[in-house]
Amino acid sequence: MNPRLSILAGAIAVGVIGIASTSNAAPITYNFTGPTAGTNVDLGQSEVYSASGGPNLTAMAGTYSGSAPPSNNDGFNTSSGVHLVGNDRGTDEQGVGVCITSSSLCSGSNLNGDIGEIDRDSEEAVRLDISPLFASFGSFVLNADSVTDGEVLRVFQSSSSTNIGTFLIDISDGNNTAINPTQNFLYFVSFANTGGENVLLHSLTVTPNGVPGPRV
Image 1 (cartoon, rainbow, N blue to C red):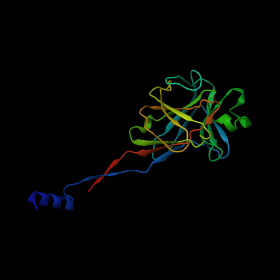
Image 2: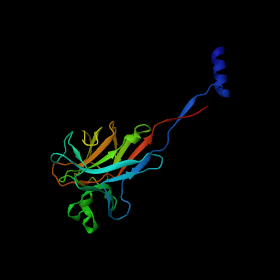
Image 3: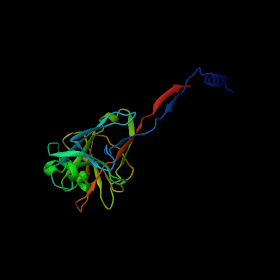
Image 4: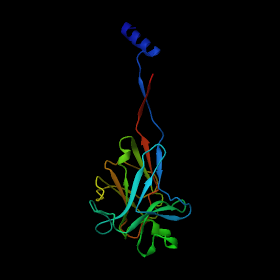
């Protein structure tokens, strides 16, 4: 054996020369279901969501400008009389939606069924600020298991809090869908050519970036 190679191998064996390993922490999930099982709950126009091991994320209710279905660069309006709704009514009725504050639609028995979901024809939208995640997390996976029977949750991304930006992806099968966002905000709307669709955002799962482990 080459003497230099022999010295290097010995140094590694006794830990003279360290090699940094990389450890990957487990994914974390932000769950957008409501605080009360079996019902819909008016959350107000904004809501802060937390997940163990991750930063807080803020969601905001609003509407988009123009007419349904949404288009790139439609404006996002937060003074449109809408609130977020936390839904937890069963397997395919879990997640955050939107209600209109007029006519008491966000309160009492009026807040039920599709009223608490993201409605296409009312041009409702949910904005989620994901900027706190970019420094330390990747591998974004969305779940929208309320999307059934031809419904679509359309996702836009934007660097603006007042403009829905550009189309990112359509979620049509409801379950885990990977995305690769590059902007600070995600906008969620209901999209389908037939109209009348109502959908929910159930969860967002992210994975911590690789963290250098101890040198060995």
